[in-house]
Length: 209
Ligand SMILES: [Zn+2]
Image (cartoon, rainbow, N blue to C red):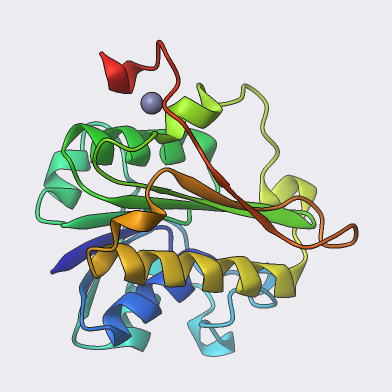
């Protein structure tokens, strides 16, 4: 089994490591390099990785079961980058990329997990088969979504959400369809704990046409 992991940061790192430890071959995609400001939340990198591409640094950390490609997941390159993947997971910091990963995976019948973290909260959406898709819930990418770089994210929170995302990714890799069409949500850890919601198919969503 092979998984395509989009993003090698605070969310993609835990997912890639967990999948590889679980016996899954992993392709890690990321176009960025490791910066000092990343280290507090991307704990799989160290000072020795500064300036190195995140994708190859993470793959090197994982070892033989991982390969790192210094590329973004784009519509033009999706087939070439993920065509051999049985599973897609996204830990990118870009809503447009998340929709692209979810749409591509849904269209090709691959299970997928999409993880996001910002400020004091985040979420992990899991899709597979005919279950509700990412667009059934979120419809369209927001026009002006803040990024972690702009709005910040609590460092340790990324470890929590990345851990949840890793657990979901492992369940998808094991063929567990019970997590499909569900979202784990932490609105704001200062105000309460996480909740999990089952999403129903949205009439009119492109997944139904
Ligand atoms: Zn849908």
